[in-house]
Length: 310
Length: 322
Image (cartoon, rainbow over the protein chains, first blue to last red):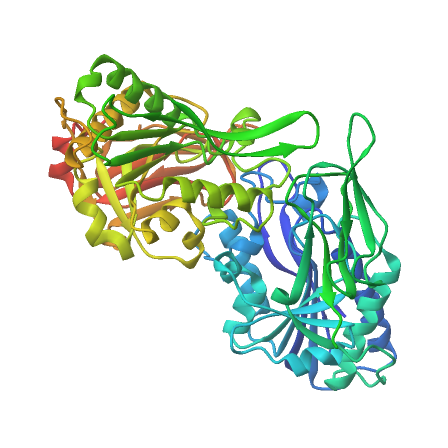
């Protein structure tokens, strides 16, 4: 294992801003893994720390396939993690809206450019990503529909779902999109949580990455278990929206099968406690997202389902 | 007449309302319409004064009003109320969610209703104030895909500068893009600085809005156009100065200054060690149309934008070598 600083910026009153990478093996730039890019992505950092520990062990046991190099960047934004701010501390910009970056531009454009310089040109790229809405997701692999995506390859993770996402305008400045445009097979891995560390889903993510590495012949160990992934489009997710605001009380979990008409959640009046609204499943399906904020706004997609295939 | 563009119930005893004031002549007017919009970014307040001034002038000469004037002073009431650029609670830039979606979440729904309400205007002016970090000369920014259509209009808006920038996919999520795509000629104004009101800029732009109203047959009274803009269509004419080191930027030139090559714009200092980390100088002759107002800089922070050349035009606009 080789630990090195991939990019740094000097600050006036804080320690230098550093993006640190861990390299395993030597040779062809096979797989690059990147963790938290925002200050609340503790789970994403945790997943990478587990992978660093696992890859270190595999390297010591001579279980990496020779001629293949793996790079892990656990955290692209230590400053924001350390100050518990989601975006860049000074100007609230999002590094994951700055790719491929600009080395002579503004601070987060420079950081994105510095990171992209280190991560471009790899055959496969995995980003531990987070959803912008607070809540729990069913674990899945997500790919941008750029025309370069290979969904069959994404199935090699053995995650329950592979989600193909048609990029919206702001997606074109994300790492995942630019990775694909520059020739890397890029995958975003979504585990259950973001701010809270969930060891169970982190373990599932670790196994998924190891399965992928095994099937891509980057490590000598055999793939174990995993799901036969179902490929869905992000437009196939059916949102269950709050028809009024109030306290949100949910009764289901990600991954749970539900019947059409089944009670999923109540919205309660915040002053008088009565039930303002009852949210039910619009179709037979699997719960893919459950919002976990105590209060909901009107029109918020508090739950999402994937329709059961007939 | 105050109208509610859209409203949505909040969890605890409050309605979020987007409001506008519609001003029309007693006879109903000729059907032409201008929309004056501001407050998408909650920390940009320059447009507040313009909204007030426009109404003051109409109230003084209601007989000159021939069409409809819609004033939208607060697109992002949460942001304005909490001194926040984006939409608080969502950590979202409102100017990245247009055209919105009536079936989407609360913010997408509001964005869609706003676009729906403004659509049909003959012209719209979306007033911004750069941000809290930079001070700007009154200017209009135009996406190059709409340049042919909008430059002639922008020249009549009494601003000092019209900057045609490259198209960017990300900008397709702005209100201006959404409106221009719906045949509403929409000008994006940047002027002054965040969290402040610069009265002379407000008055200058108000003059420009009345010129646009006259152009579109909405106003029959006298108008003033003292400012003819410099138009920049070549991206290479704009020089960006980004901080080479982190520190505290102390400007020595104000925006609007004419610069010779090597003129000092400011210093980046280190108050801990009492040293000068960098002397920021102009790389070229030109016009300083943006300068940093907020002193703290990270490596890469934008400190200034300079329009290269155009010295004679800038001198005519009152630019001086300071």
